[in-house]
Amino acid sequence: MVLPNGYHVRFGPTEWDDSNNDDYVYPRTTTVSGVCHDNPEESNESEWVWKPCPENANINFDDLWYAVNGGGGGTWGVVTSLYLLLHDYDQPEAINHGIDQILACELPSEHRDAFEKEWWNFYIEFLFDPTALGVTKEESNKCAAGPHLATSSFIFCYGEGSSTAYTSAWTRYINSRSEALADAGIPDSDINLVAECSGNVIIQKDYADFIIIKEGPLKGKAVDIPSPSYTSTSETDINLIVPAKYILENRDAAREMILT
Image (cartoon, rainbow, N blue to C red; front, side, top):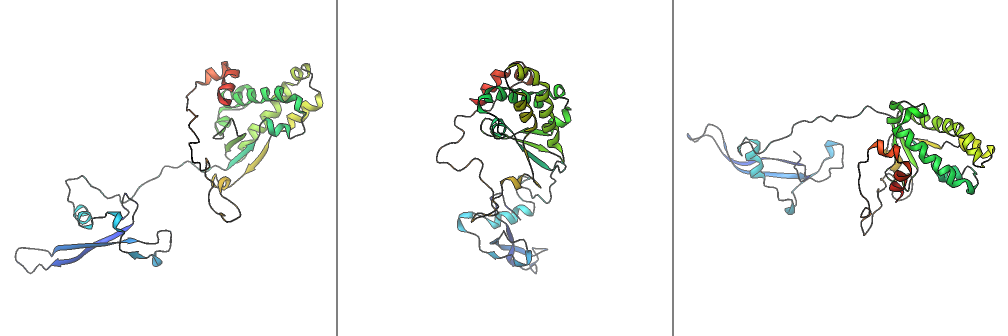
C-alpha cells in the first residue's frame, strides 16, 4: 500500500489470540506490524528491500489495519485502481523563430524594427486569426507560445508535420507584405531573405526530450524550469486572461503588454 505521505508499506498481524476460546469465531489480532519499501526506485519487485519505517514517518499500523478492515465509519478508503485520461500522442515540433533568428539569417540590423513589427503581427494572426493567413483553426491550435514569450522565441507545435503550417504561413505572409516593405525602403533581396528564414524546426520524441540533459555529470536528468534561485523568479509576473478580440484590435498595446 502507498500512503499519502509517499511511503510504500506492507503490514499485517504479527501476534494474535487463537480462536479456541469460545468467545471468538476467528483469531483476534493483538499486534500489527509493518515495514517500508527501502529502494522504491528499483523496478524489479524481486529485488525490493523492506526495512523498519523511519520514526518520523509517523505510521500507525494498528490504525491502518483497523481501517482496511472497515473501521473508521467510512472516513478512510483504499484506492485499488485509477484511470488517467491522456491526450493522443502527438509528436512535438519546436520552431525557433523570432526577430533574433531572423537577424541571424544575415538580415541588416537597420531593418530590425520593421521586421519585428511584421513578426508580431504575423504571430498574433497565426494564433488568434489564422484564417487571415490561410491557416485553419485546427492547424493553429496545434501550436502555442513557449512559457516566456518575451524572452524566448520558441513556438511549440504538436503532431507530425504540424510546424509546416507555421513556417509556410510565414513565407506567404512576408511575400504578401513585400510591396509595403519595399515602399518602406527595404530591398527585395532582404524581403526574400526574411521570407525564406522561417525558423529552425527541432523534432523530438516527446517534450521530455527537450529538457533532458544529454551529457555531463547530470546526464539523464531534467533541466529546472525556471532555474533555481534564492529569490523569486516570478515576483514581477502576473497571469492575465486577455480576450483575443482585444489583442487583434490593439496589437501594439498587446505587444507592449507581453514585452513589459
